[in-house]
Image (cartoon, rainbow over all chains, first blue to last red; front, top):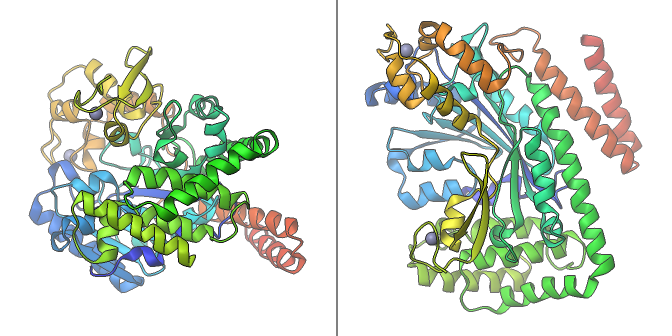
Length: 346
Length: 158
Ligand SMILES: [Zn+2]
Ligand SMILES: [Zn+2]
């Protein structure tokens, strides 16, 4: 894999609905083949047969590229993780694994993760339905040619009983600096949790580490249909969007100078720093992103900000520059990258 | 103050977590450990944690899946099945566990090789309704009319 797929990742395009708050919507469908044992009992030889079979079906029925993980180096694997195309478990697994990346760039199929198939679709903005349709098309294509493990009562059978039924996980990747700055984030996210949604993200007292990025997703996969699961997640996501809009509004009414200072100070550092760690760059980029999202900064597109958000990560940076770098060299090169990209406007 | 996790680096972030006893635990972490953790406020209890809890309470039985050789004891230990037939083999033992994780006993969603694909249709209609709403908001009336036609077709097919 000598080319970096992130150039063509449509989920970074910022073209979807509400993409000033929802960076992307993701759908993951877990499936297993009836004819193969699950992960816990699958031998390496059987895993190889599984990979070959699924890769073959995908290659002949849809356009895309297959990556055999035994041929990828650790930086390439890490880059796929940083670009949200594979899961952390898949990245560190010692098993025989493969990834099929659709040519359109909006769907990645992990083969031999915890389940034989993890079909992941990622689209720009707040669009669970659109994301589902992408993943579902691949699921139906595989279903028409392979016998999937299914039970009348339990639905689609998975390695872990927590994924059984629909095998469906729907999630939104959110940028919520307004709620962090107005200190309402905990209350809002706790609300989502009380209705059974999973919330991930890091925020600490006073420091907005990890770029004010959060993820919410469903946890329950059995008993609700696919459409119902999407509905369960849609309403609270809509609500969070409204809260975030209100928070941004209140900031620009009550603390416009402080807000602009934060945004333009961050931009100045990103444009002129000589050393940037990935954490610092992520946080500063969040402030610049807010400036772009609120129309305070007009020189850059959100797509460029999204691209930088992914490109600044260590493995992506090294692949982009085409050489491996020590951590200190990475901080230097990252600073150069920001200077260049923000000067040229991408 | 040193990080509660690695006990090496300076703690910079205060994190609240809900511990196993449902009490809020405060952790002081360095940026690296906080990033690795990736979770600030954990769920009250995640399905995976609930599974582990339920499995420790489950009685031992001498059952082995004839297809993959997984024993019920192995399943109790790791919480993962060895093959699709395990669900059949251990059915009476796992029904209660699955019901209590999901709050439901049976699947109501998609099925393999369905002719009509009601879920896919329903979600397509949901998407079209959203698109219609946005087209109207942007006053793109031609596009809105197109979407209305598509929706009508889907409704008639139902
Ligand atoms: Zn630490
Ligand atoms: Zn079995």
